[in-house]
Length: 150
Length: 150
DNA sequence: TATTATCTGATAATGATTTTCAAAATCAAC
DNA sequence: GTTGATTTTGAAAATCATTATCAGATAATA
Ligand SMILES: [Mn+2]
Ligand SMILES: [Mn+2]
Ligand SMILES: [Zn+2]
Ligand SMILES: [Zn+2]
Image (cartoon, rainbow over all chains, first blue to last red; front, side):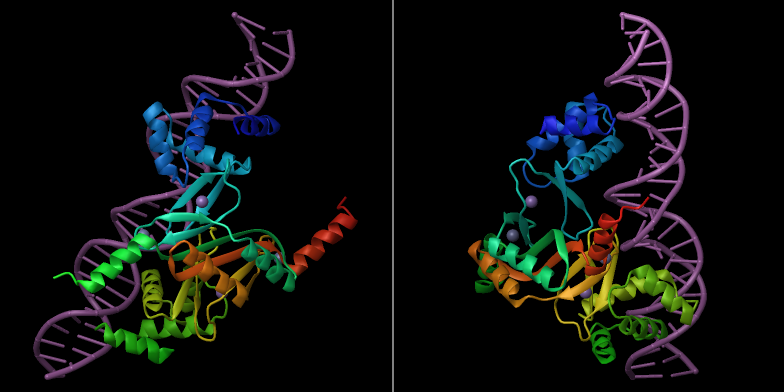
């Protein structure tokens, strides 16, 4: 992954820097979704001189290098995830506690292609977000119904 | 639809105003997706005294009244569509020209429920956006390949 | 018509992201 | 290793969609 990035950087006539190395390293360590601000704060713990703009710039580069994917749950915040060990997937999102699960359903994926084909579209990507209550929040909700809070 | 809104307004102890009536009327006339700015500019054509904030406030009310749905294609702009004659649907989006198509696949809808169920989630909503090239843009692309631009 | 809560538009504020810019760092060529 | 062209950086300012503020206007109700 580090190599992938260095290859990309070189191919674009860009330069490798201490900051880029650090941000990449921390980004790859983080499993799941991370916001620019969260990444910035993790980076600052290791090197408090790194600027916020550099983190944003790096995230853009990581997307271009196909190392990162931007995910958008429509809540006005952007988040990123790295692709190392994370093939394409969709998301189950709990609207109560915010927990997310990564899921894939091959049958759905195939039907998406067929659906697009019926309308003459050739697909390049998709985003599918399923919103609802996670098992824990469902349980909590059921408990409340049984014994309403006084 | 007008009645639905008036009923909602009343139920909340709110008031009907000239501005709200005008914005609603124009919003309902617009088929497809519309941005707050676009709606604002259409409204201003009829009444240049209406403020931008009122349009934003109205869009929020329309969502609450279940008359409007907010759609988000992850490009940083929010858009709205009214539900009159537009039951739930997903979107095919052309990444070249921006055209969108509304589509539904009942098989996919059913599989989404099953997928969620397997993970203990109960679904309340979902958003599925399929990105790719529309028929026209595919055709254009094919033409270019046949005869590269000099 | 009088009362009172809600609305409105102008304006300022917000907050995430981007841009600007001068100083610093990289890297290929000496 | 030094040089020098080019890119990068961090701080600060700018951007831009959206939201909050607030004093005056307006709607609903009696
Ligand atoms: Mn994910
Ligand atoms: Mn639509
Ligand atoms: Zn939950
Ligand atoms: Zn197209």
